[in-house]
Image (cartoon, rainbow, N blue to C red; front, side, top):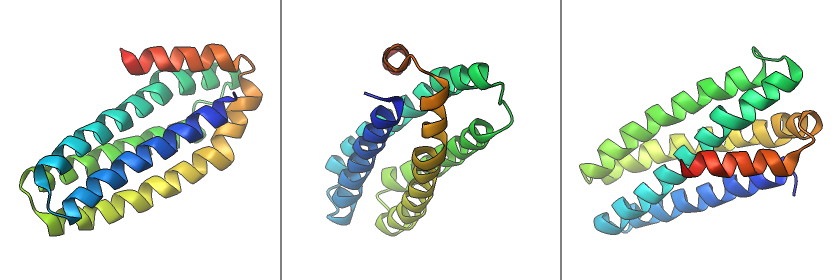
Length: 145
């Protein structure tokens, strides 16, 4: 399995968890929504940690590119974390309207972010990091830490 395939699969898993949480909010099933939100948030953070602590540093070391796409992706990760914090506040307040408004913003942002990674960054990573299995194993370990 390539790094691109592994990470794209992770994107889809995360998207599904987010959709599950959002659907529970729509149905005003707050307890279920909070549980699903925590699953999504943990999965998202694991994904970001895999990229920030393993994938990006290895890519930067292999290519010497520290001010390129990985820098932009890190900034976008911070924006996602900020939106998630606001979403969590809306969820804990059981504010359906606020949550759904913010969730639309987050979903659009994540879709654009994922497209950049899947179409540009990950193919570059696949070319630069030929030991895909070792990198994937390192990412899995980082996510579980």
